[in-house]
Image 1 (cartoon, one colour):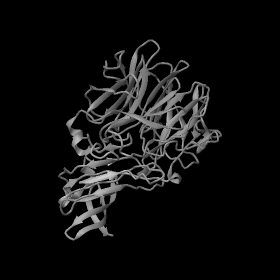
Image 2 (cartoon, rainbow, N blue to C red):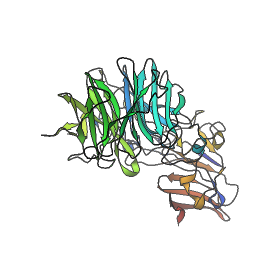
Image 3 (tube, rainbow, N blue to C red):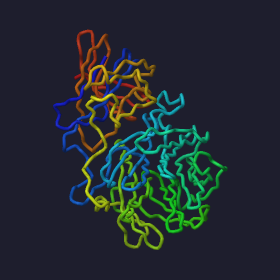
Image 4 (cartoon, rainbow, N blue to C red):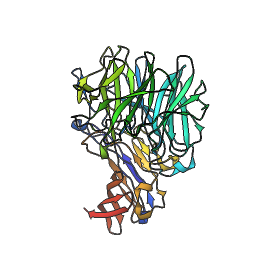
Length: 469
């Protein structure tokens, strides 16, 4: 048994990835991850002088999309195999964000009871229409899902509406005449399609039409977001690949095309590679902003915000470059004009385990089970129960009951208090950094007492004990 307590003596407590692990022969595992930050380790985008710095969120919120409804901004991002899935974040100024919900607790398919890395929810889109919030997403081999809610903080109603393979990155659109459409990509195909939908957005009505395919000018085009502005249909879509690509915009007077194309944002002379997939939003003040991700390796896909100007019916995103239609990403800029100042906040990281639910920052590697943990036995702690997992070489990559959260900053410190009461030899409890390469520190019950060891592993090789402290 391992019991993890919040460390209330720390001035600032934030949690990211730690483990409680128990297992003879590395067959039985249990994981929890907690991280403590002091103030200097917090990544705060709000400079509190009227400006902000990028990234606005230094954490892995891949493929962000957003909308504004009155004075509120809502953002969603990919979750892949992590559960609960598709975090919903809220902000009043596009700089200060917090998690308010997830679109689903689990995916209603048995395959997600085990870690299904690279699958699950890809590139969701969020929209508001006729009093309902909609989130659309695809999984690579299951199909097209739609979730609806009266408010983003409510429980979402999730449905699989089209059982198909290889669809990706769907975005709904309701036109002025009430007709509904869905634009999407196809996995590894460099093609954009558009479909008619039923007015309530719950049925696809046709096989779709190809509206863009140009391997020379816009290779690897994906992640389309469809808007109608001043009589033009605009599709914002990244191309060129995650590491070294750019933002393209397609424009047409007819939703079915033909579409003109233009590059509107690229890395240029900056250190912001990509810059990749994102969403456009207009403020009440009339300003426009574009949020997108940048791939930062082990830190994940962090979120940047760029100013947007319009000229001759085309957007220029970021800082304008002389003689180029494409802007460059900014490192710092004026905060959006939302009419007032709002408190500085960041996505949640701390958890005192003093409520009957986990903090919204926590995710498992697969559909969660109630028998994995308890928050009720001792308020202020989480009790983790042993779970038998038949993995080869102790490979954490295939363990479903890993409780994790995203890296919250470039530098941070993880701290937790552990009550470790082992029943037999080889039971372990500790702290893990998890990814394709992973490492953890663990207390291990031995015949002679308890030792402290460091373990490393990879997703293809499994565990290798490298050092006893």
